[in-house]
Image 1 (cartoon, rainbow, N blue to C red):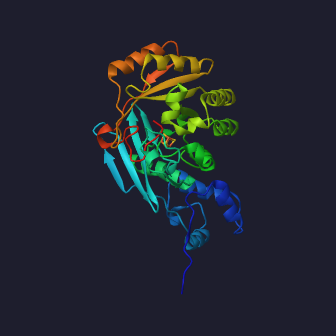
Image 2: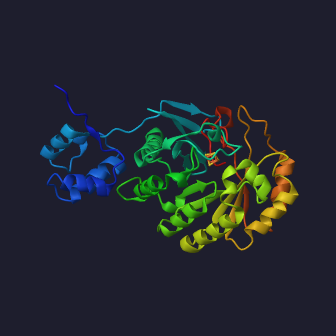
Image 3: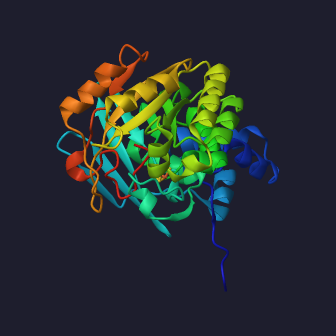
Length: 346
Ligand code: SF4
């Protein structure tokens, strides 16, 4: 006799779990209890859910499972960075765990592949397979927490791994709500950053969503021709639109936007580019994050010399309100920005 496969509850929101349980004649608070067990207590066995009556636990175990993805491989860098690879049925995604002072930051993926094809990004060459579900993104966070152990969980999150998070808007917003909920890992939205290549409509939508996550825009260059050459979507969403959207975001959320510039030798690392950048950001409450390009197989692009990077920074500051050079993490395990098989907005 054929048996119906059990439905996986992992990835369902508290509201969805409540609907499911009330449909089964249970009180609505049982849905919240179940959510707390799954996402806050990280329990995958119904028998451990001690505040749920035993007959109900038995019924749940008969119909459902709680399955989350665990990494197939974890690579360890000499600087402490970890790269986790998750094998899904239709592809691989990676996330990177970085340590800096008391911060434990996870860079997670939001799609398998990416449709946008930016020239400096390995993911851009892979094509697009599909959006990750909220559960698959939550799974990356809980896997990192499992690895770190109780009391040392992930403190900061950046949606900067594989994929364009704002093209997976609904699932990304859902998982942000789950991640900051007291029924889940309770990570403050202030410690989460969504990194986009710069999609004005979605930026405005996120600004109106009521969320307060940080926004990073991978600007690359404030010179339209250069940007268009490396970020094809620039043809559809020119710099002027991105500037307007960035202003909407800062007004609605009260947060400064971060502009990320991946510096590539003889492409966007000249003082002329820095000057254009200063003009572009005028009037926008923002920070600038300079990222050293990390070469990956198959690219001829090169990282600028440190001297050139410092000269770029020194031109920008104090003309720009805040300028940082991002630390490189995990270069020896190909986990740094731009090195992942599945990398990233950086
Ligand atoms: S930089 Fe971001 S948007 Fe561009 S191809 Fe890579 S993952 Fe996609």
